[in-house]
Image (cartoon, rainbow, N blue to C red; front, side, top):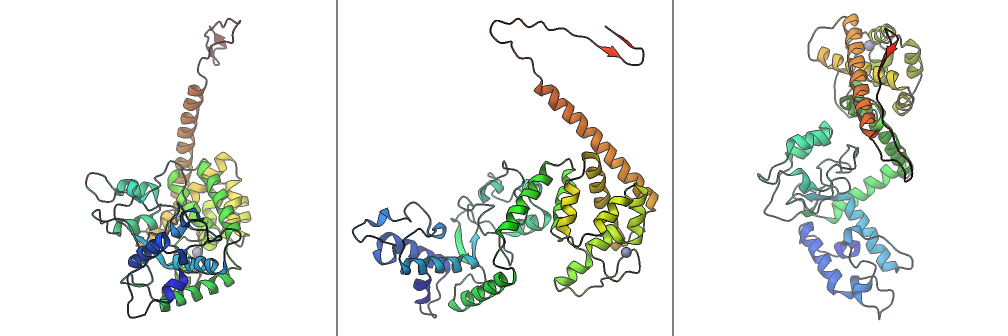
Length: 384
Ligand SMILES: [Zn+2]
């Protein structure tokens, strides 16, 4: 396909949708574009039968020409984006459909396998608008805000477009720039990150199954990826803002300083009896390591640290917005209170679930089961 696109006259500049249709057409009817290993083989018996051209993968023994075509498809996929029509052909977690510069896929990990899989699942069926409640429940704020701005065209099918161009028009020049930028990025990153992606998925599963309130899970995940909007992170993204800590005279508000090293936050850790843990966290040089230690903590301690970090972040945002600083004793009280209430509720829920699990079961054949009941009062040492 790369050869096919490159041969197109620049002045034609058709939309990518037209090009994609032409390619599909060509794939169905033109043997020249099909990977025939055996000229007597029917076109429909090639490895592309039953699969979308964009999902095609190389197989052993394909020709040089076909390998080049696949390389072209790879380049094309770097700049593709799905425009939402009815949303039935767009896979939420695999396809590029969210208008952002990098992957155009959700940054929210798919935490639950029961979550919707097609974009059409996110559209309210009766009124044809985004189901905001569902979207805000499933996605992080960064994804949800972008999704809710995407226009829906229910009268049309979903179409692929060329994301680098504001008018969705493909050009060889923009594809060249995109490929060059991608190659540079890959060489900087050491050639891709499948291992880290796999590690990320394992950590996410661990976090998802941990005993931490849902509202703090997303925050902790962002902590693991150092994507919390502390001032130094915003400066790295090119924003010209003040980088001073809001609580002390430090000139660099980064995640480590805000959550573990700032003079003010040290009082909070100490007040909660967690100075030892704070010292361990503060020696770590990357957010991923902090996250791993966190997830290996026991049930109660993990909940306490999660509430501590979450409250510290909320407090920081309130101070940034002009609210006065809460005394540290108040914050300590809140963190303790929230943690104990959460643990108490979790224990009740767990014991209810375990009660449900110990249901009466009939005995095996040849046995008689006799059920009895009894109670015991510890204070009076009596029972009946
Ligand atoms: Zn500070």
